[in-house]
Length: 203
Image (tube, rainbow, N blue to C red; front, side, top):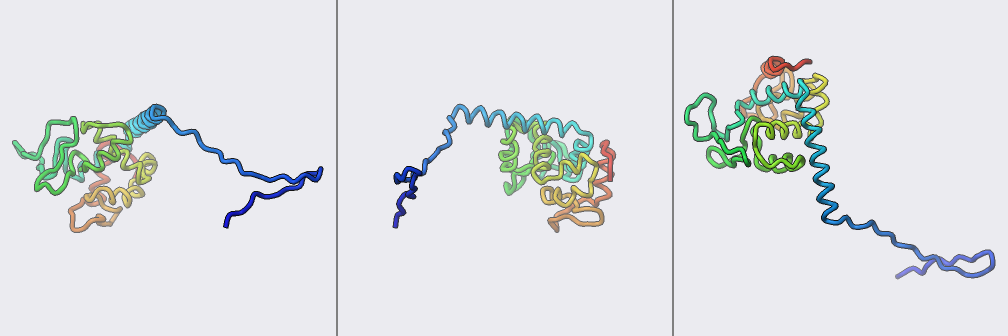
């Protein structure tokens, strides 16, 4: 059953009917949207470059890379020190794709999958898989789990529980194992030593 517009009597005795007005938000043009998205991506990129320049953040990333045991040119299955390793890549113009066995696309220093590369790299408009892009994506990953400020402040232990959700080789904190057993992981003391050796401060 539809309701009739509200009837209001004016001071002069005249009956008045109230009719609601519908307001609409102007639709964003395709060109305006493209400009806005490009600006947002550029702002995110510049913010992450600034984070990457912080010594504690840079040291934390180096410690992650050491824990994961990879390299910027590693596909899944590559082995450090192995000559003519078939699971290395040289084309950094895009994500290298699946590694050994074809089961996972984890690649690079931080074992970034192709889906993670698209999601987090896309936030900054990045389309290659260069070492710098890998670093920036790792920064974006740390931002996404809300621990980047802890890392800047040197609160390594405070950042570990959430970071361990992203990287299986990380422990969840001092005296704790990783979040994904039975995957191998480094002890917290080893992670902290790598972090400090890379110039990080804190505990």
